[in-house]
Length: 236
Image (cartoon, rainbow, N blue to C red; front, side):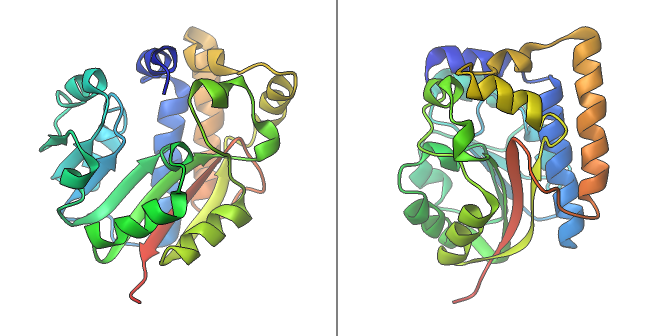
């Protein structure tokens, strides 16, 4: 990921988008009807540690992997048990849950990557995933963040099933903002500035995604800027 994109994510850590993503994960886990706590969790691609608080709700032992040294230093201050410097080191242990929050779109061979994670999950272990949705929304934002692709519900489901997981719950999210986001992206703009909204606009957008999270507890949303999924390791 380019430095400018990383800097933007650092500034946006307390924005409506980060909080909305955490709420979407919480709601999708609730709809999955899985245990609310696990013995240990891994935040894979933790960035600056913006999802630590949400993962700490699920496990008292939360670990992190983050390849960027600067981001990892900041993340280490959040409360992770350990902040690993390499994926091999992080995946040498087993976890009850692995969080992949806007991660797999950065992986060229996403099938091989997800397959490799199975050994790092205990029996019945969970993946909590968010990814950007719909390839037609590809924009400068994806270039800046060095994405390989965007997903739709069908492609993400097929990917997970092929890699050895069963899907417990999947949905789009950031639905109410889909139309304005689509217009911005289709006109070639990145839309990244929306992460930096403050004051009243940030409060308004947080209200919107909070409503979505309440809906997500009961049913999937039909479209959105992102996808959220909870999947479970399938015994082969």
